[in-house]
Structure formats: structure tokens, C-alpha cells
Length: 408
Image (cartoon, rainbow, N blue to C red):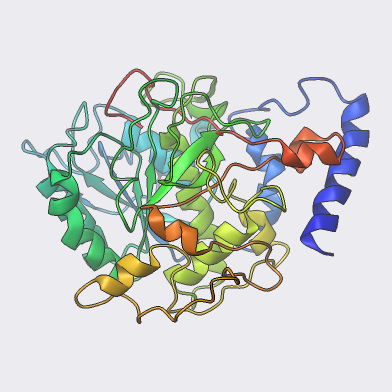
């Protein structure tokens, strides 16, 4: 079935179902079974892949490995703060929450993560509030994660950059690119204000993640721009009831931090099913199977669309393409010294890049952005007629202090 027919058939089926369904049918169910578990067919995905064999480095406030939901999920890691207390110390609770969203088992009525087979590598780089001006520390944390064999780096933080931070972090990002490592970062929570192009999401080599809700709408606070590459669920996601430990609750507020964690987990699920793929192939299928209108390539609100790892893991969709060709950041990777990937082939002006059988693919316009993503309507949730397919999607809100200017 072509992407257009698939989207229309899904839309019509959901229209009929929603006609008799209560208005809260898509609301979060329980902390152990949040709304996106049904949307992404999570339990069916787990019959094929759980993230086993994949290590995700969580660069954050530390990860409390004593929580029942994280028992056996957390590696030793390292503490790079000025007053180290160990990578398993987390006074803030933010890093623990991100780790739980990625690989929590739900033990002790805690959070169930999207990829419970993943191993978490905790890298503690701040205690109670992120200091994004400590660029050397962030660079060291990236290089540590790469050296320890992490395939994916999760950076659920954001802040403004005058250019100094990007300069300091440039080599660390290059090391990650050459080492076949994916880096995800939140775009920030100032979309309803000054909407700055926050780092590290705005840096080349970093995949910027926006936030959307259960209706496929971008969260109003989700920062937008050319740095957005993907979007993921955020609003009404599970989190610890007391902010740090204990049974999980549903968090009504949100932030792009949680969306970043769920995007990282989505990549882990795909990579664990296809361990021979490169980062380029994993990212390419993520972009090409993301939820969006068939006639829309990308926009500044959800980038190339909302993550749909189930389409890859369950349905086998997405053409991974050339393992050495990055779907975005192509010019940046080729310009590195030494280059991370071979020099790009000249492209015909009238023929944008596509991946056969996978829907619209990222094209040359993505190169103007540090990262790229799109907002797309969700026919599988919104229902209605074909006109729904041209409605712009916006953020899946995620749980992080929205008032914190440096938080994501």
C-alpha cells in the first residue's frame, strides 16, 4: 500500500472509530501504559525488539539506579561535576526521569520506558541545575560516552549560545559523527516566547527534538526553527510522583526533555532490531517513517515528523539506504578533517533525495539547518476527512520545568 493510501485508510478507519468513542479516548491510561503505548503499538514492538544490545548515554543530572524501575538497567557511568558524588547520585531527578522514559521496566509501579532492553550509561554533568556555559564539561561528556561504546547520546537540555559553546564542542561532535553515534537534544521550551535557537540542538550533528501532545499538536512552548529534526510524545507522559522516586504519575505539563528521551528510545528500538545498520541508516528510516502529511517534506515545528518506530520494527517500512550517506548534516560531515563520511555526490537540482518505498526523504534543504524535523498531522489520531492531512502537527509535550530557561 502506498503511503498516501495508507494514510487515507487509517484516517477513515479512525474517523469511524472516533465517531462513537468518548472524547477522552486518546487520553493517557496509566503511568505503566501511557497514551503513546497504543499509538506506537509499543507492546507489539516488544515482540520484535526492546532495545537490547543498545547503550544510551544520558548526559544529565545523574541517574538514581536504586529505583525499582531502573534496577539492572544502569551502568556505572561517570560524574564530571566539580563536586563529584557518583553518576548514580541525582539530587535534581531530571536525569533519572529521562532514563526511566527510555528504559524503565515499570517495577515498583514506576515508569515503563519505551525501550526496556536498553542499558543506560549515566554521565552526571550537573547537580541541581544545568550549567550550559561549561562547554568543556559537555564536550568531555560526549567523548566519554563515545569512548564507552554508547550508540546513542541523550541530551535533554537546551540553552542559548553566542557561538563559543559550539566552537568548544565542535571536536566532540565530530568524534561522535566519526564513531557512528547518534545525538538527540531537546529544542527547548521557549516557543511561546523569544523562541531562541538553543544549543546543543542547533549545532551541526545534533538531532533537535520538538514536543507534541496526544492529538499530534505541537506544544505551544516547544521551540521551533530549522534546528528541529523530529518530534516525539511529551504531554501526559509518566514521571515520578514526588519528582524523584516512588510510584509513577501522569505529568500533565511538559517539555522537550521527555520528547528527546522518547526519540532516543525510538532509535534504540530500531537499532536493536538492525544492529548491522549505521547511524545514517537508523536516522534515515526514522525521518522517512515519521508521521507527517504525504505532501509535506518538513517544517520548522516538528521537522520531518513525529517518531514512528513501530512502522520500522513491526511493519518493516523504511529504506535504510547507503550506510555512508547521512540523511542530514551531509555537508558538515564531509567537511570534517578527517571527514566523517565520503564527500557527497553532486545532486541534480530537479531531483531531491528520496528513499524508495519510504515516503518523502530529507533533501538538500536540510543542509541549511543544523538539524531538521517537521510537524505533521496524525491521521491515526486526529481522524476526520482527507482535509485533516494538511493540518500542521505540533509538539508531543515532555516533562521538564518549562520555567527554567536552561532546561529542556
